[in-house]
Image (cartoon, rainbow, N blue to C red; front, side, top):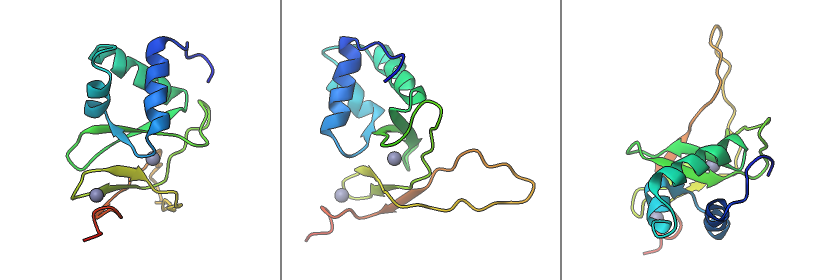
Length: 127
Ligand SMILES: [Zn+2]
Ligand SMILES: [Zn+2]
């Protein structure tokens, strides 16, 4: 994982990501780690993990920031053009491993795209 020093705090966050296949909101991550580190440390580590290609971030429908594990990214090749799905019942977000073609628009250079699909997840659709 390159230049990230594996401090206790880094390891703790990596652990949390490896135990959760779904994305985690920053609010939730701060809550999970509040006995071990302060908010600022959590923010700083997450930013470093993102620039290393370990996690990626995006905003949910309410504008809150979330992070999810990357599967085949590195610091030089960070491409997360996959869509995310947020359940409107339970609020959970997961990465969808489907390719979405970003359209080429003449005269516009597109650097990134965030696609959030909203609906009901498999757990909530069981009545
Ligand atoms: Zn749900
Ligand atoms: Zn994702």
